[in-house]
Image 1 (cartoon, rainbow, N blue to C red):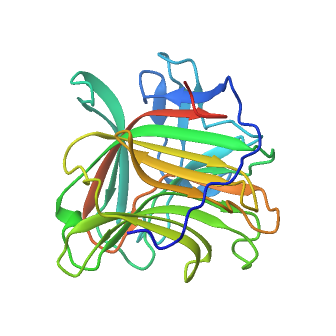
Image 2 (image 1 turned 90 degrees about the vertical axis):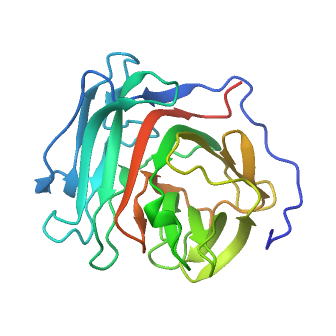
Length: 275
């Protein structure tokens, strides 16, 4: 069900030959530090090192951002959340290293996103792709929500910005579905899209893709795909008050049904949709 009319309007020029900005599958050379309060950016668990398969290094350094990590929020003295790099069977059937996240329980707004922080440079286009697997236990409770991705612009906390956010919701019968929206604040949507047609993969790997074209007007675009199927393709605002992106929440584990588990692999970030 679409709750906002998505009329397609002309876009500004989209890059014809996008550049790969970052790529990593958490392979040899990538490691997790211990979570603590005294990192240079606060209460985080840092991912560091150079992925020997791709040559890209952590933390993710793009658009002028050179800091980032797994942000422990309302974590009950590091007890409610847990992260590790595991070796598992990946999406292509081979052994691979992945980022494993657990939320054991919540104390308030308990969450542990990987945040790309202090973005300094503006961009018209950004594309993010990664593989993901989720457990089934936390996806079949009635009136549940689970967040898997978002970005926020500057001044969002003050009510003058914009957030793009991807959810999984469940209905009153506990049936999960996708939800895609842009909002002024958590209670005030600018546009919303529900998708109850594309199935939610349970206990299996799936590819998620996010693309946005930056605009305050009709020339903006926000596209979300799962395994190549469109969840929502919104044409319209992707910011407010001309605000640039402040930070990107690349992999989020957050919601009101616990415990929950997820596995993340093969992250790619481009400055346009790759061909």
